[in-house]
Amino acid sequence: MEAEGVVEDLRPTVTLLNEVFGFEPPIGVAHLEWYYRGNPEGPAAVGRVDVDGRQVGNYALIPLRFRAADGRTIRLGLGVDLCVHPDARGGGTYRRTVEASYLEGALGGLDGILGVANAQSVPRMVETMGWSALESLPVRLLPARGGGERLTSVEVDGSLLASGLLDELLPEPTGTPSSGHATIWSADLLRWRLARPGARYTLHVGSDVVLVSCMTMAGPVRVAVLLKAILRRQLEGLLPSGPLAAALARHHRTPFVIHWGANPGIRFSGIRVPRRLQPSPLGIVLHRLSPAGGSRIGDDGISLTSFEFLDFDAY
Image (cartoon, rainbow, N blue to C red; front, side, top):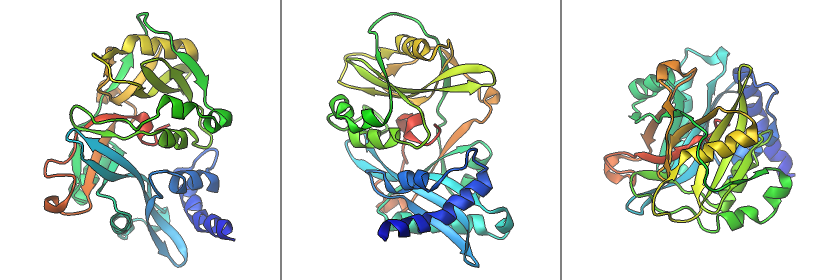
C-alpha cells in the first residue's frame, strides 16, 4: 500500500512535466521514483504549487554534497524540473514555486540551491529572485590524440550496476580538492546516477582514471560526450585529455568529443567553443538557504573546480 501511495503522489508531477516540457517519449513515474526518491544522498526537496487540486508548479532540489579545499562539506540541492503550467503563468506562480522550494530545502537540511540554467534563465534568477551568478564553465571540443594507457570500455547495464565493479573502482568517496569546491562522488552515488531510466552510458576504466561517456547526435553527426572523469588515485601531475578523448572516439566511432565543466585532475586541450556558437549555453546560479553570516557556504560563495555533465542532469 505504501508503494501505491508513492506512485499516486508522483503522478501529478509526471503529468505536469510531460505537459510543460513535451518529453518524447514521455517520462513515467519510474523516472521520478529514481530521481526524486532513489538518491543515496537523500530524497529531493520539492517545491510545488497546487490550484484547485491540480499541480501547476514544480521545482525539485536533488541533494548533493560538495567538499571545499579546507575540508568542509556543504549540502546543496541541485535545482531541476522548474516549470509552471501554461494556464497558471503570469499570476506569480513561478515565484511561489521557487519560494516553496526554499522552505522544503531548509526543512531537508540543505545549505543552498545550485541551479544550472540556460542563458535566458540566469538573469531572471539573479535580478528577480536575488540569486548569485557563478563563473561559467567552458565547453571544449577535445582532440583525440596521443598514446598512453588504453582504457577498457564497458557498457553500463543492470548486471554491471548489480555487480561489485563500482565499489572496486571507487572504494572511497572522492577527496578534498586543491582549490574551490567539488562534488563528492561515492560508489553508491555513481551507481544511482548511472541507473537513470532510459539512459545509455559507457565506463572507460584505466589504472588511473574512470571515465563516463555517452554518444549523442548533432544533426547527422555522431558526437562522443565526456560526462565525468574520476581519478582512482592521487597523481603527481595532470592527465592529458588527448588520450582520454582518443579512447572515447574509438569506442563511439567518431572524431568529435565534447566536454563541459571543470576537472582539476585533467589537463584539457582543444578548442573552447564560444558561447555565441553554443546552441544553449549554460549558466550556474546559487541561492543560500540561510543568511551569509550563518551559512556554511561562506561570504564568498562557492567556486566549482570539479563539476561536469554527470554532476547534473544534462544526459
